[in-house]
Length: 253
Image 1 (tube, rainbow, N blue to C red):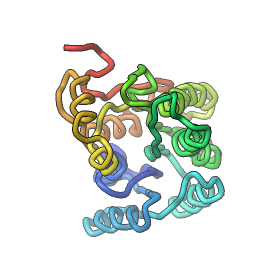
Image 2: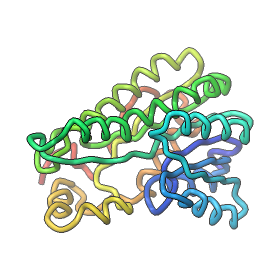
Image 3: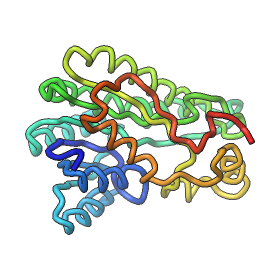
Image 4: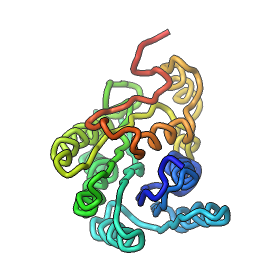
């Protein structure tokens, strides 16, 4: 029960991805969790399956790109839990195109669904995290925020995820006097509904070929580190970006 009594918010908990895996692992480690997802009913469904195990989990449909909806979700969750100890900003949208074909609308869309949504949840949660006195923010970066990969058409995605990593370091610096830690996790190719739908054929083989460990990551691979960063075991860890990417940022073979 490494997270016993922790009051946790996790975004993007619907479906089969990283958020759902983290929600299950956090709850089984004793946390009280409120999740959300953009897809109608998805967060509610994953929460219901965990409540059937006797775990303290709730889920809500929320469009985090809507700042007022995101704020309302944070405030309602804080009221329900009696505060916030952990905010795990897992949710993210996407948008990929070669830079020569990238439109301003796509650029702005990617910034909104990958970077702005971190602000939309973290800013209203900040006062609750300060009140906790020993809080943890976990943000989701990407291998794309660390290295350029031409065939993926990821300039906007890379810029947004690089922004998440930089934002994390600044949150760590500002939050330290109030006991708020902030860290980022930057995954490689992780199996999810999105990657199943959009990363297929030659693109999938290309991505797997960049990894030293030639398999897709799983939600559980990421959740194990997230549990550590949410727990008191990492009380001296802040401002870091952790790559869990099968070795893609380490080298080639």
